[in-house]
Length: 470
Image (tube, rainbow, N blue to C red; front, side, top):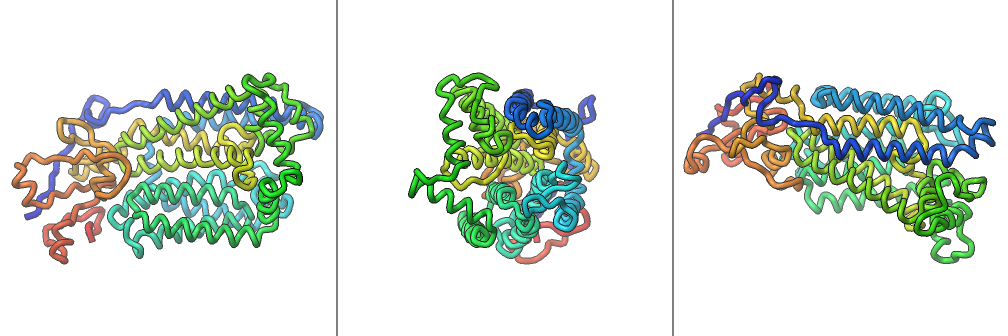
């Protein structure tokens, strides 16, 4: 026998389910704002000499970064207010737009040192916005596939093709560092969605093999790898950039030389405002400043993962996970590069490095995460209108079902948190004898009985016109 639990969740005065009332995570917001403010301080400190030499005005680069910060904060506020459920409805169009923009960069982008990565005379780098687009599409894809994630034909291969196409369009710009970030984020999201260790190992093997081939094809990548090898084989012959970065990083001691007092940025350290900003921060604020900065990133990750854990839908949970992995992974790549632990990647530090596209896209992404923390009224109403108990409905003990339960509810092997299984009104014996189906945008129709008997049940529930559990 197969039963379907129906009924609308309790609705409060605000129109949202009473059990799912949520609010913004102010600790997460504080971490984002503090990192943005610190980035503006470092932007001025690392660019006033560069701006004076290049533009004749010490405030030229800083004023642009300040403008982008303002735009990003407006985007942060807007997307914090916007219901993130809208992104699921337009996920396919978002991905299509990303592909069109990447093709446009290749065809019409600005040629800078033999690469095409920007548009509008270098003022826009679309690959930064594409990172968020990939996260949104991957979150929607993973939230809808559920049990199929562990399938090679229906999970691994389609997901690999999607990420592979985006990566290929960025590689041929060429931009290996951005490609590495996107691949790392995609792999982490795929693994958290329930992929097996064998699948993850296969993906890592393919990714490493592809990068080994690419570094032999792309000239500047080959040069950076050879320079990295010199660091460990013949330290006296290490590359100038790496040497100056290490000197700058270790020049601040415990308390630093003071903000703006780093001498390395006055023509000695290449690109102090982008790739090497953490080295300048260490010189000016010392080890204590570096530790406090890393602590802000740790708080960002902690609260971001907490938002993912408590999200009202699996789609929102995957978005929060993807944004956290993006920021922390990119930061770690930069830190390891300036410490000569990996080849110099050219990956900017999130929030701290000068770059308008990077800062705006990061602040928008963080706004979406805050929207996830607040919950999606749009997705809950869709489920309520269908007469289905959505992820924000009543669970056992009257608690709201969290994303951890929607993820585990659709896939018993998903790794993000312990599930709170929705419990029906029937007895335990009835629950064992029936195949309870919880249906919604993020809770796949069960179909366990149909899978066991190998055929479609005549009483199976349709989800948006399609059979589930097949």
